[in-house]
Image: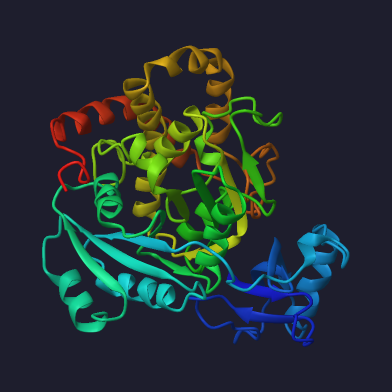
Length: 430
């Protein structure tokens, strides 16, 4: 399936156009075998994302025209008088930021991500690369040889785990606004500006998250992950305020996966440090398997801080290509969710009563989210970012792995917590 960007009304007057996504393979709009071509296209209006379409273009047809017609049928596109139809705004007055990228032994992917970060239109930012428990000096050598003097700093974090690496980035950051992304993404040139702008416009948010879309869908594992919802959280800007819980979120604030993902998030340093940063017993690279981002989202909401989601801040994620990697992700998603909830209860026991009150609905929600889905099945209610789920069903094997992960998560958290017991937070020892 080709991944593309479809501009419906370019600000430069060129009208409808279809283009390659950053970091994705070149578009093949005329397959050699003469067959149909499938597309997943991000639909933009004057640069701003308004939705996605999944379509099939017959040989000989113009893909841009076919997909634009489909978008007109499927997406409620703002009219010219709507503020959301305005073009993406220039950088302007946005706060200084530090971008933290945690990595481990993936120098080629890291270089691709760093090149996209150095191309940001944000006027004032630095990049911190945190090398997490490395086995070789490949990452250090890459930064020294290719990025010295270009605003990229190298930092070593010997304790394994994504949360520990992120906490090291928090400790060394030179900005109040801290943006986090992964080494397997390509950032849209407007990403950092869009992600940090809400901090300047809204004085209270402690966290802002953005939109994550696939850079390519070239293997069955990648297509399956995206059809399961991927990482997308929709195309509507939202503000999650604990003082005014959203009526459409009965499990608020415990459905942390609704709020965003760790590959595209930013925080105010003060509130993040005040809650102890990311729990080092969570995250990829620990026995907990994940959940570091989910823990931070819910913990900040529990402390009364609003969270803001903006689809204008886009990163393009390189999904894992192999089936075995997808199996590991399915298990890790389940484990990370319950590990993060365990971390919340351990570190803030006062959350136990509201969590128990939501437990029946939460169990039903977990069953629905991890259910196997057959071709043509309906029942994706509440899953953001759905792309063609009826065409690409979620296998029963992956459903079982997710549910096993849910059961394992609390045990994984306990194991990980024992492993980091007594270790001070990086900024406490600085």
